[in-house]
Image (cartoon, rainbow, N blue to C red; front, top):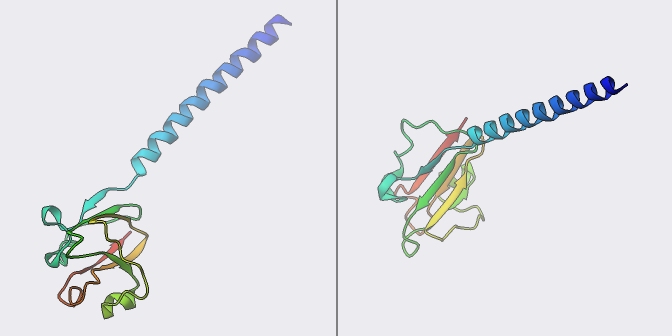
Length: 130
């Protein structure tokens, strides 16, 4: 009978060790899946020159875009496709911190500056995330 109990303890110990290894693998994979972070416009930040900034970059859902800008001169608004085309906010509220972080959703993501004339002058970007 003692042999049976010892076997049960060995099985339980193996189950615990196996479960811990599985948990560590899952936690590692979650860290790997976490998206990349991009600074919009690079060193220059969010401004009129950023329209072509997306060229050559591959974005994925979960990636983060950081928009750095002078809050006294610009803002950031996440907008719909129609609002992007017409350079309107569509009722969306602007971000105004000067360092705003937005996580990309799968598909098209649209961003504009809603300061009068800025979007029309090219201060807008569309980012497609796979």
